Amino acid sequence: MSDLEKLLREEAEHAEQNKDATPSSDAKIGRPGRDRAKVLSVRLNAKEYEQLTAQAELAGVGPSTLARSMILLVNTWLGYPYIMLLCMGLQKSISHELYEASALGCNVVASENCGNAALCDDALRVREFSPAEFVERTRSALATKQEDRITPFLDEKPYRDFLETLDVL
Image 1 (tube, rainbow, N blue to C red):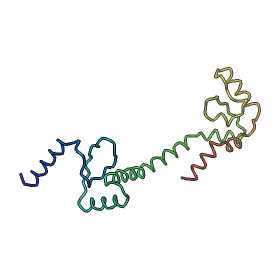
Image 2: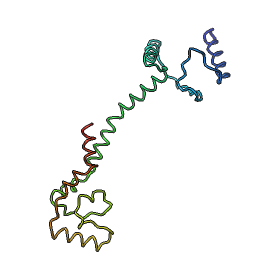
Image 3: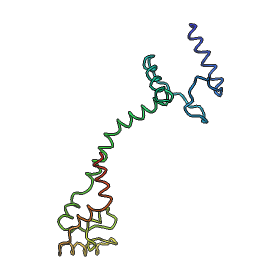
Image 4: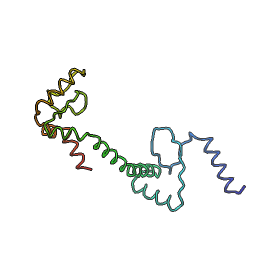
């Protein structure tokens, strides 16, 4: 065993035996008043570590805090396309028939809890689902054309908030 390996082994044993020892004066404490954190090893060569330490000093934080922040930033950046795909899928899940029915006069029978009942005329909403009431509302829808309800729907706050969110993206 070389002298370096022997020295490293002794230091490791000393550190394990003195886990609760106070840190040296040149050590930066990232979370004062909390238990010491577990260490997750990351392999950096000397140049990379010097760059990380220099950037951490400029930011006024410890190297581990800066490394965690960078990891969080990169993971957020990598997750952004997934969130965009998810939002696009949610937009596609809104039934086009509901919008078309609204533009044509909303002769669509809907239940109170369908989520899009606001598009449909009040006379066509099925309050308590039963075959008889459903048939009655369907006959009413076939007999007369209902009023166009798309304008009030587009003026509602949730829809405007949705459009504002899309403008930001």
